[in-house]
Length: 318
Image (tube, rainbow, N blue to C red; front, top):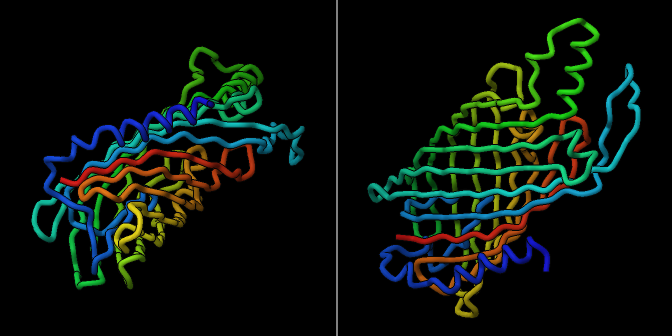
């Protein structure tokens, strides 16, 4: 059994062995017209509820081409690289009134090249982020919920760039500059403001449909241009077999696209992302699930590569 499989197994086993933690909870999963929506970490929901959500994920990318330094417009040579990263996410939302909930999110992650070529070319990065904001209900009917949300987020990145450091050393030697001012570590940070609409709709007890449309303003971590306006769009469908009276499982499929990641977060962000999740939905106030994310990521010295992340998600409603 690999390390990733052991971690995923331990997380699922721990969640299933501790249902007592939720026995005192008063909340329940959000539902419309008898359909209980299956949670998704890729697509935020519009519901005004109190919950605590945790996610642990492990990701990888293999056999992508790395373009090494160029002479003029010519690439010297290509090599294959591989990456591994881990992410941890804590998300808390507190219902303040029947129509308003406030909350915050803390995210941490690290990425490392797992062979010599990717370690030198793409380096090692550690990212942290915080987000605070709220969601307000605009419309609710039996099968439909529409909410607006507004939040502000801060993201920081420390990048150990071996190749960039070597290039700076060479440039300094050629130009006669000082070497003691050079550093192998580079720190970046940026604030972003987000706002938009979130929608949930259910035509039957089995099926739920969700969508989001956001705009964001601010600079990317690695962007040199001034702040710009970007869009973030997504949609999902979920099938809750427990709501339909069958088995206590739910399945969700989601897609998300953002121009912000595509434009300016080349070292750490994906522009197209898809997700498939399977969750245990047999308890009224908590769920635990496994998710598989796929996407593309743009790196400074590589073409866009395909990535996968497997994660464990646990959510408790209070």
